Image (cartoon, rainbow, N blue to C red; front, side):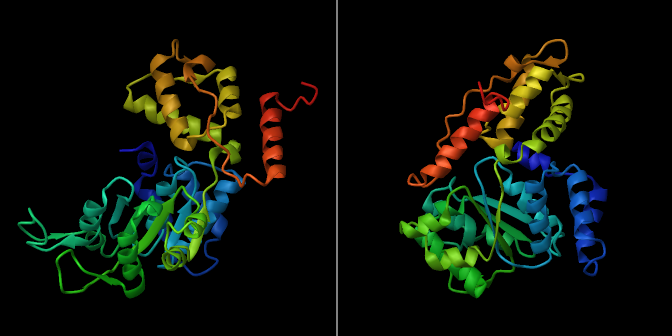
Length: 321
């Protein structure tokens, strides 16, 4: 199970907090709901950028609106999807996640839609797909940009007609699911390149939430770090471990191309190799960021500004250096 999935779990009283979204508008206030979500242990962060994500997640949770989560790898898209699920009227239903990039085309279709007996060689008995298994709950399509053209057309029918066919089937099956999609790619650019259907793009992007990378919400780094240290302490059977000031400074300066997932893994390794219950900067083993800047190459002013900002952070704001 991924660290982001583990991070999304919480206690029973948290479920009650999520249930409050069904109360009349304004009771309780949205800010109070965000605080409830932030303090349950399911999600961690108090930065304005992260609170804005939670605000949008809670707002859309009360509806059945198709939602698209966009952000770099490791930012916590599935965590936000689970927040939406648990804050929604469908919270008692299943949450079924499928990674569209992890399965070949033929297997992806059978996993999504299921198949009838005799649909292909080896189909000795009928099998329901993930859409059927998610009935009454949420279907989370991770890396939706990786769907093949054929699969895109079939997913579009699910969203438009609320029905689908099993492979080899003739009877339409009603799709009682809410769809939450996620991608680390720019779907608008994928449409422009002819790699993604425009009609599906509009169906998925009814309500979009951009999840900022960790470098854009540095106020959350130490909160996340302390949460992860506690989790690793129990999973690894370690005693209490603390970060030295130098290690804290290293965490705050790093660009985090792998985002929250990278932070989680870096701290797990550091807890294994550290001595005397202290994590030092060298224990973190953070390599320089090699991630390319995802920008229009013609927008030189933006590129220049980001380069200057990275340089200023590296020298702690000392302009003469």
